Length: 385
Image (cartoon, rainbow, N blue to C red):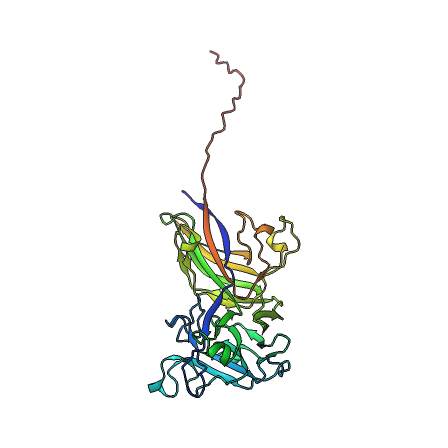
């Protein structure tokens, strides 16, 4: 009978941080001044508010909130730190024709009122996606003014990942401009680039060879252990910073629906295991030292627990659990030794972490041999008449 030994290798691909949809006000040539509306780079709908946005297109089925600070002197010097918005406040922006559909095309604007550029001065804008960010996701959301950089800013206290918002793509954007510098120049658009505030975690699963004739693998669940599901986020000077996110003591059930694992030639072709989740950026791994001899039992930090079932021809099903450190790009075959060259020290904002679970088998082969006979000379037996 042929049996097999399971070795599980976890592969991590870290994609570079990416920025999101350029969202731009449009010039409408209005006698009262130019309307401050918004137009997305790509008008094709892509993702809804409760989904993770991929690529750089901001889909027309999304909505976001906008605040505005109008500086009459133009340089924002009259605003102290944390000054409240005085021009727009908590406005929902959507892809709409607005209050007078007959005279307006579909654009990004507030559906109830039109807003126009003042003839003088400048406006600093702040945008937060999504517009319907549930209050149950955080304790306090505070837009404000960053006097040291003359830009809009925002903070959220105790933003928490839950089953309700595990795919909500929290993003921020800001921009400053005036009627003279934007509405009457070129195409009259204010470019606002949304930046992801969270990390994205995605799992795939495959086998490195086609074992289907002999073995069936089922991936039962993936759990993230020793993580922090909440933290404080601050957006200032177009940068995102997290704090209070290093109490790594919680578990997160990423997915728990059984999926048969199939052969795929490479990690990119591996089957997705459930939908991607967003996660609080945080230290993903705290190792004791850089000694590769450290085993997983000696290395605290965020871990991934994989539960699987393995069924072989003429053998009873085997259900097992493998636990590996979350940030490693590879667990050495047959071991869980720490490899400093493969270490990722943290999950960062705006980065998507693709983990591929590769179920790799070592066939059990036999090498038969036979011990030679040991000859024993017995006493001569005399047969007498």
